[in-house]
Length: 117
Length: 251
Image (cartoon, rainbow over all chains, first blue to last red):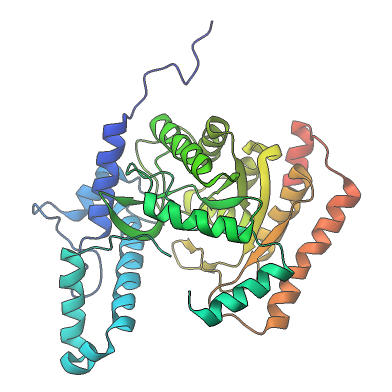
């Protein structure tokens, strides 16, 4: 019987898939820079562009890091907006700037733990 | 759901056949399916009597933390196997057929072993489930990843398509974003016409969930789909030869 694609040894195992999802989500939820862009450095000090290039393909218009940044901005703007809408009292007491920093610090430590409903 | 909302919801259920569509199942996540979420979903499935349930071919959570986004899959056999297993598990728990929807994506992984449409086929055949074919998402991803959307359309197992989505998108300098806040653009209508040709007339949903204009404007846009369906009914569903597919794609 001819060997089929399914029979060949595959590039990825379940554990590697899990590791890839962990890495991707860590990059996506890594807090944005003060300019609200992807950070230039990863947690361990390596350039972010090099870290992203290890698992995301670039294309003719976007680098790997720029592609990750699309998801990262989308994540942060979405979760920051939710807390903004939910805590008008904190906004009134702290003001825009401090409330923004508080939301980032909170979400960095406590990412969402429930699915969308 | 509050009492007033429940009342409206029940009125809708009395007058319409509702088909449930979700964004939270994350069939492609390596995390186990969220049992609490499935339990709530099952109660809703019983209440709506939905003929099938659709959610996305993506992942979005890891180690119990949620992105609330539709993150792209690596197109690998390991991912296809896992995703199909989760779809079967969800179907067995919810006791309702499932259709998976292709998402718009903005990134691709080095580790991928196949194209997106090959991955879609691999998943739905392993899971023996349906497809919710989002024509706009195919177009958006084709522009972001430089592939021919008609190749995608030809690679889909057409007999598994249970529903089609159409929507508007936003063009940026370096990529296209699936925003659901515009009328459907012409290239997407063209691709939709082709989808109907190869899949046969298929029930279609227009998605418009941001910057929503008047009801009449959205309704008119949704009704445009009927013209394409009428055309497809006239032509009938037929298997196309490779040559006919190429000609239709580039007509």
